Length: 108
Picture 1 (cartoon, helix red, strand yellow):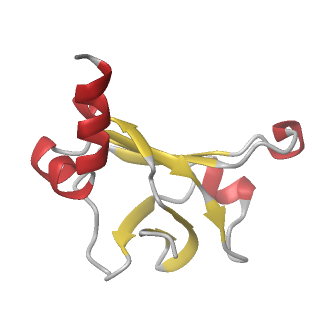
Picture 2 (spheres, rainbow, N blue to C red):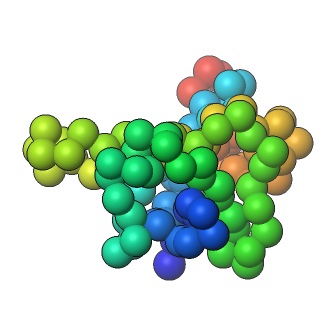
């Protein structure tokens, strides 16, 4: 089960584990697993504002924005991707301690 739910207009349009990121930039990213309510023309183009919640319903934020990368037929089998941008450092530390650890180990 994915750790995070992606919403647009009050509907769940997908899920993600946000399994990677860039802690200094406050960016959490991961594979986006769309639900049947997801529409590339509406949700990947930022026409509809997106929000992210934890599995328990608490909103992840504030953040600057949420972006889905979906190249449609040109994606050639690569997974869809989601980025949550501009998370505050305190929230990032709480939600993604594994990202911080990986970042610290990379620069030792």
